[in-house]
Image (cartoon, rainbow, N blue to C red; front, side, top):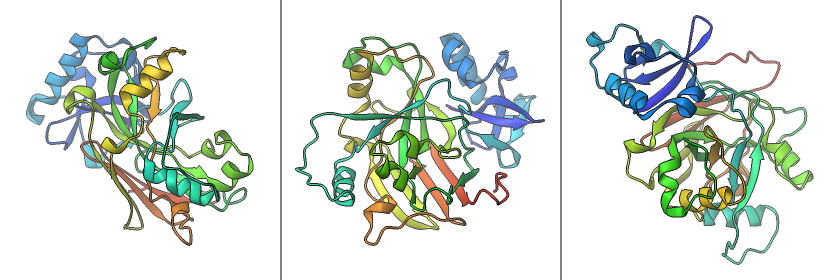
Length: 307
């Protein structure tokens, strides 16, 4: 099933998509109080989730509180993460190679260790919201289409073979990056964490909706031009490895978001580079989950979401 966060009467609400994905059903249809997506992830019982799943299977005529998806303003599924997003760096071999070229570094085609960094998210950008260009401090704005994993319960010292049971679901994340800041500071935190740099959504696809581990096609487009095209089966370090490695030394709290890295085709990978600018429209699409479609705007422009 697909869970969404949406705005109704200036409030954030949680719902589930109908099976035809034309309607959002409010949690009240499953006799549940809406305390937000994080509460559902952290505190929802299996019986609660089963009730929501049964709700999603109903016809619109059977559901009293429902909203037309096309007329509803979707928010990021987790608009205000409780902790920084954990990100994987250079986790596709082809992206590792283009990263080395961009930095004028040698690359031997091997990756012995995973690379982790965190991304500060004061507020995640809506699936159809705006990406701020921050042109006053960086002129190399880049996109990165990624599969993000949401941890469903506290994970500590989890074996690889047990990781599946700790996964709540998946979403799409655009790891927007300010490349000058990233390179100049020789670390990634600042250049990845500017306001408006984390589009997320359009939903959370629950883990039981597709076979595990997920093998999903990823694509990104800028102004309709295909830039990235890969599959999550090409991850160097997969979900089982990552969750097991991280949880060996740190507790991953329920609701933790782990973004699994991006394939080749980012802006800096082209010759000459193809960085984003105000007015560009970037789409990040992951099979079975959906698309983020965001417009790049300068800070002095209207920052309201568009459709």
